[in-house]
Image 1 (spheres, rainbow, N blue to C red):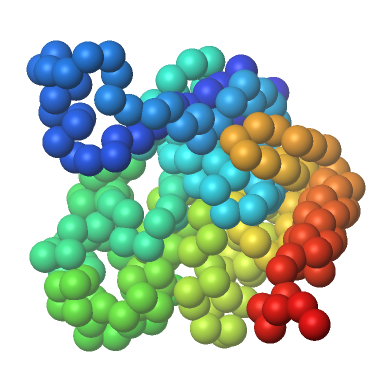
Image 2: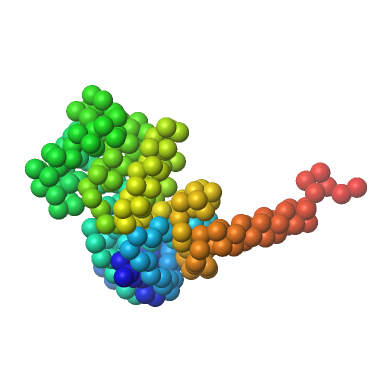
Length: 261
């Protein structure tokens, strides 16, 4: 059974040269549109069945994070459909979903409430979250005082201890130290073996090959390849090699900075 269904999904952003142009366009001042359309995603379709682990790869700006935010329900698409069936826990951009003025403890309970868990349920999970995050007395301090690593530790601890059906992870693991990265991968392997569905956005191609059974390759907002992770990673490596070769050829054909003899 598919727990994620994405059908002809597209996401458009409006780009304005000046902030004032957006206001002028909204109130009807000026002639014509004052923005340029940027399609972060264009006509992307795929399905993911329960219990699978999907890696989403591609260059910066390819639409990976936009896709994850739509799957998480943080952002809506411009066109197409996105169906996600099950409780979703998302570890997106660093600090997403945390109030910097609240303590770590307060943010834990707030995130639990957002996911539909009451105070009693979160109290049952709190010790496990604190032990996993391992930030000590900082749990009682405002998260604005946290380092990026501490922030990520707490965010991941919450994300994996709220019994999600679907876990979305966006590049966040690169922030942690080696020991904590190992702890995170161990926990995600446990979730995977428990039949949970995981979607991972990362630039770590080795992690995609080892951890994910399926992968998507996004390029310029379009779905370029999907299938078994090793096949998709091979396609991405070939694409990057070809683009780097073209770049080198252009450099070799460029002007000589010292002039010609």
